Length: 190
Length: 190
Image 1: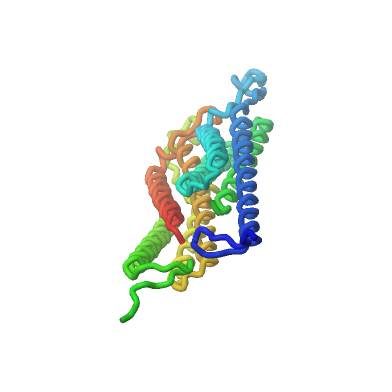
Image 2: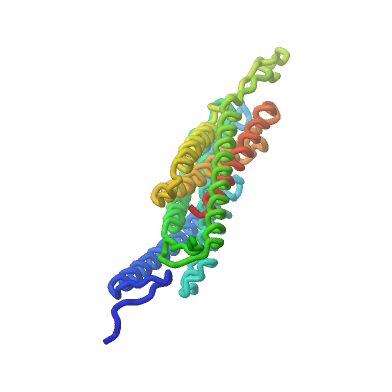
């Protein structure tokens, strides 16, 4: 009769049922890890693309010469006009690349090499920091564009470029979701 | 004669020399953890205070009526005029409070309760995210104040409020160092 007891990695003895539960738990965690990594990849890619294609041209009424009537002048808003938005797109592109590489590494690392797992988790934390700084920067500039500030005499621009601002807000929400995915990916044990 | 072998937590047997090295390593890690937590506390507190007391009053030459000569008008810059700076100060105050509480918990948790240690490390990560978003927001607004942006017609203000901007930059550097301390605190095993 085959023994139902096995020797575990710590040199202890465990029943077949316990070992099966442990393996099932490990598979479950691995499944969640892959789902979170794929979500982070998709969300950060979407965030970078949504802001990266953000552009709006509209016309504003301007009085060029006081004695003449106001004329309609075309004005354009592009994402790369603001350095905070450039940083946001770059940060999300880096996070997306990390998510793709870590997804491949996690799939390849079936043997459970602790060194690779730890390196992936360490870079997950770097991505959390990078994405949050990108969101903070974009949100600060976006909020300034939405509300303006009388103290520094920076006028709001979102009343003119409403579609541009809505698209930027959507990109920030996507990036926020990506960083939450990285965060929960970190919470799972390697 | 007393045995030089001890039973470890995994049920295995180890020599007295190995056990001593392991205890010494654990003490070393605990020491580093306390040093990093204290550094994070001091740095985030310093960052919050340095920006929280940031205020500058200066005079600018303004032409109020075109036919009259320019007059010197006093203008004041305060940290709470900008919502990004308010967020930065609040984020650093929260991180400082967490550093103080986690320092006490780490000192009290000599028994090595894994639950408390994990909770502290989890909040460390939240603080990394919070501090980086605060730095991102403050840096985006600070850079805008330093350089201005012709596309949205936001003029630079740091040429007028130079001391104010320098103090804000110092606060950001302190907060950056605090977040690095939280980051490395996380890298240490619990």
